[in-house]
Length: 209
Picture 1: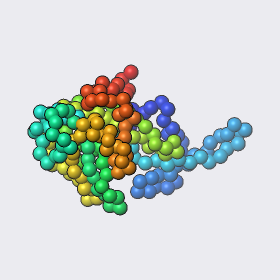
Picture 2 (picture 1 turned 180 degrees about the vertical axis):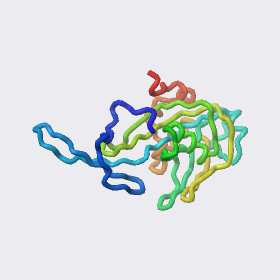
Picture 3 (picture 1 turned 45 degrees about the vertical axis):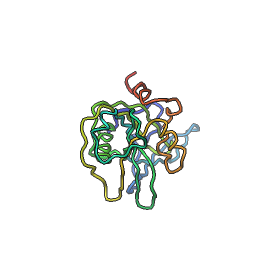
Picture 4 (picture 1 turned 90 degrees about the horizontal axis):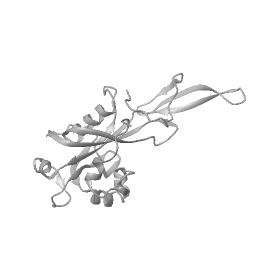
């Protein structure tokens, strides 16, 4: 169940009927009254929402981690990124994240689960900083969270179709990586305004205004 829904989101109406159920996409249709009084059949796709996590680690927290790679050796705050490979797709960079499952209570629950599964990391502080709808004909929202204050590290719990390496990068390093098509998922609308990890923590939390 979605906890936060932007007012501008284009969603499937309650009266719509599901006419096809696929592995990723479902198809819904509904009768829509037009301006001249006639009725037409409208249609939209629906897929599970996506969550992304920008997780921040202090130098002290980084020193406690095992099996992670820092892109440089400087002592500063870093962000968790994943170097991933999936069937029919080469290596690419992304943030920890994935689809919100039916078992997840809401998008935040899904984000915490995905971070724990993909990176083996659990954090105490969470803030929703961005929501977007990639296509207005698909009922699909992408939620981006900022997480901080590391609680613990545990083993990854990856799906059979995932190969994921955990790396740590600074804001400038991510900005440079994001220029590559292999790292397009690292792009975040606020990054061109950020100069440090501290700026991420200052971003306003959605739903609290």
